[in-house]
Structure formats: C-alpha cells, structure tokens
Length: 430
Ligand code: XMP
Image (cartoon, rainbow, N blue to C red; front, side, top):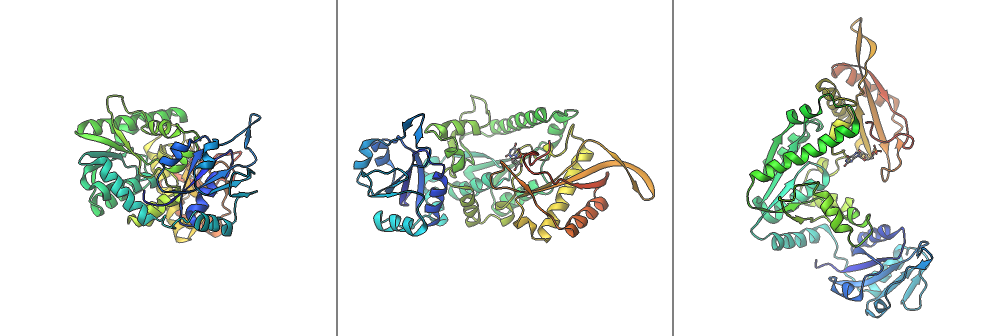
C-alpha cells in the first residue's frame, strides 16, 4: 500500500466507520484499529500520517475509561482527539469534525496526500497479489454477487489464467443470472471458469423439504460439497479467494476478528483441503467495492446488483420447492425487475422481488374456475437491512406489473403487494 493513511483508534465511538468514510471521501486512506494498539504496532503500519482518537459517549466501559497507551502520545504523529479531552493531543474536538476541520487536520497538520482512489488501489493490489500468489493458482467460488465478481475481476487482472473460478448453479438463481456470469467472465473477460449445473442435485435433495431452516441447511451444505468436489478435481491449487469486505472485519470489533471471520467465510471446507486465503477487498467499504468493479470494467448491472440471499429463490418459493412454483417465482421476479428498470425504480428501491407461497386459491380464467398460486410482490427501502419500509409504488406501475404476471406466468391467478414494514415483518418471506 503506497497510499498515505490516517489511523482511527476506536475508543468506544459508534461513529468510527462514518469517520473513516469521511476521510476516504476526501481522498485519504483510513483504517480503524483497537484503542489498545501498541506503539510498535502503530509504527509498523505503512505510511501513517496521523492518528485520530475517536472517543464518544461510550468511552467509559464497565466504569473504566477506555484509554490508549501513554507511549502513543510520543509517537511523533499529529494526533486529534474527538470527545476525549486531553492535553496530550495537539487538537481536541467535542464531536466529529466538519469537512473544513477534517481537511485542515489531514492536509495541513498531517500533510497527507489525497491519493486514495480506485486506480491506485487496483494497481497496488495487483502488485501485492502477484507477490503473494507468485506462480501458483487461486480458486474462487464465483456466485455472481457483487463481492465475488469484483474479487474475480481483480484476481484475473493480477494472475490471469492462474485464477480458477467455479460457478455453482444450484438451480435457485434468478432468470439469466448464471448465463450473465458465464457471458461476462468466460466470454468477455476470458476467465478460466468451471461451470457446474447442479440444479437436479439440489432440487432432488430439497424434494418434500418444507422447513425453511432445513432448506437453508441443505442448500448450504450441498453447496460446500459441490465446491469441494470441484476443488478436488483441480490439482495444484494453493490459494482460495474470498470476497471479505471491510465491514465484515470491523463489525466483529476485535483484533482477532479478521481471522475468525476468514475461517467462517471458507464455509466449512474439509480440513484436508488446505488453502491460504486471498482477500483483496478486505479494506473496502461496499460502495468502494462497487467503484472498484466499475474501474475493472464489470457491467453496471453486475456491480449494482441488489442483495440476493445465498439460498437464492429457494427462500422465496415457500414450503417444499416444486419446479412449477420455482418457475413462477423466477418468471415473476424477471417481470418485476424488467418493469422496475423501465420505470427507473431499480435506481431508487433498495430491494424488490417476488414470492410464491405454497397454497392455491380459487380464481377465474377464460370463463372457467381455476385453482392456482398467488404471487406476492415485495419492494423495500432500508439502510442496513435491520429495519425496512415499503416503497409506495404508484398504482399504474403496480397494475402494469400485475397484468404482466397474470398474463405471462403460468399457474398464477392473483398478485398481492406486501405493505408490511420490518419490523414486524422481515424483508424476505420464508
Ligand atoms: P430479512 O429477511 O432477515 O433479510 O429481513 C435482511 C436482508 O438479508 C438478506 N438475506 C440474506 N443474504 N444470505 C445473504 O447473503 C442469506 O442467507 C440471506 N438471507 C436473507 C435479505 O435478502 C435482505 O436483504
């Protein structure tokens, strides 16, 4: 990493991430570290130009004030304390700095260079990855999600065909999703990509399984099994690429978090399959991951893809999955996405999809009684997925989508719009 860095020490503030984001937005790289970092550890970090002691209302934990080691005050770097009055720092503020104050600290006190941008990040990472991986090979589970797609593009740039991507289609992908992964990575970027169509295997295992947790477990463990089988077929692989991003690391909040999370992310691969991990996005926030993807030439639709659960449409096809209802979920979801794009709602609404429950109701089609499934539309906005509000869709749009679903999707005779917020509902139905 050649870029200048500002270190934020976490003294119990809830706003470390906001501050790191603000600093990065001004073009200076910033990372968050625990308050008890030693002076030696700090000195070992590359290109540190200044340190911010970020206190906040929680700086007294269990009656004990959270303090940094005294040696830190002698580190010789410009220090800024926020909500942590101390005469040992050059600057003390009572709240997060406004832009002008932050600029003055970064560029006047610390003399930092505004050299944090995706071009520099990519060229740094490519160099680092080449050094780390050498002439060896890297394996990557490429789901088509934002993080795994960006890791793939970055690794491809660094090591070319020594990257082996495995895309497992569990049969629960959205319409055209696996095809677009193949089109982008195999046809356009010429990546070394193993495509496994495991649809029959997954649907077989899921037959008659109605319990949502059980369905999730089967999909998760079967995924590992398929991936493991593919990994065993390939010889001479030393590294495993992971789409770990910065929030995965800092949210756990401890120094050991990085390790625990990384192991967790491997997702239960057997002990005898030993890989060294490669996590080139572990310093990036989600929007930086997207910017990196765009810089690497990935299509907008892939980089701005809405969140999609690992178990895919399996959670939206309620109860025991049948092919008939799975197709109804997939086709209605495709119509919803198409209509949202036409109306520009894909830029505005955080997440939107359809659900097909496992019951039928009476309706009328072509002057005859029919007994078919409903489709439920969900469209929500949220910041962190912990709470969510429903998008107030315009009536003509809802009517247009409903008409298309009823006309084009077999086995469906009703469309409903779920207007429940989270809480009490969740975003997904399952
Ligand atoms: P809920 O339904 O709990 O969903 O309100 C919150 C957000 O999480 C997504 N979600 C998942 N994402 N793997 C994921 O990567 C999963 O297994 C999973 N389940 C739910 C959901 O789509 C929503 O954005």
